[in-house]
Image 1 (cartoon, rainbow, N blue to C red):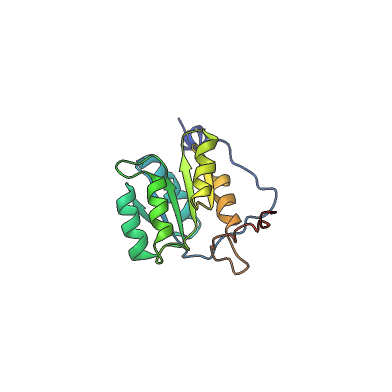
Image 2 (tube, one colour):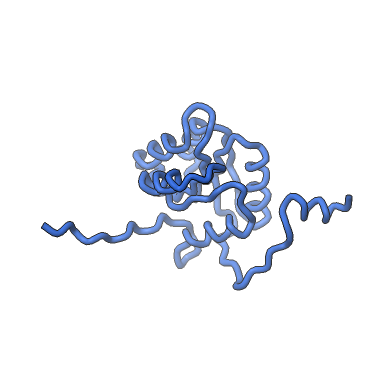
Amino acid sequence: MATFELFKRFFGPQERREKPRVNAREGTRMLIVDDSPTIVAMLRKFLQQNGYQTLEAGDAEKGIEIARAERPDLIFLDIVLPGMNGFAALRQLRRDPATRDIPVIMISGNEQATEQFYAQRIGADDFMKKPFSRAEVFARIERLLDVDLALKRPAPALTPPPVR
């Protein structure tokens, strides 16, 4: 089978963008925390092809350690991990002054909407369901860019005070 045919089989047909993609600045550092070597390799390839640097961890504990030491610009955090799960890791990241402002995109193969809701409630900035496409990864990154093309956590939605 030809290389291109294998590529199409694994990654699907080439996607055409309706509008030009807006990328973060070259050299932006992203941490991938996932115990699946396939997911890590796929994200690494997508990100490095666009000039981003990647850091990697196969479990939450190592991911937190790397986040504290390296201060990445964005974290892709799987929910189901060996040992500590992604929800517990996210709580630790949000409580730590060194990591609380790093945007986090949670990823999971589970289709449960409750996971997405819970992830957002405890401080995730976005959620991606596995399997995901290259286009989805970059659309999620683009949503977190500020006017200077730096990754930032979105401002919380303003909610009116309760009526008494």
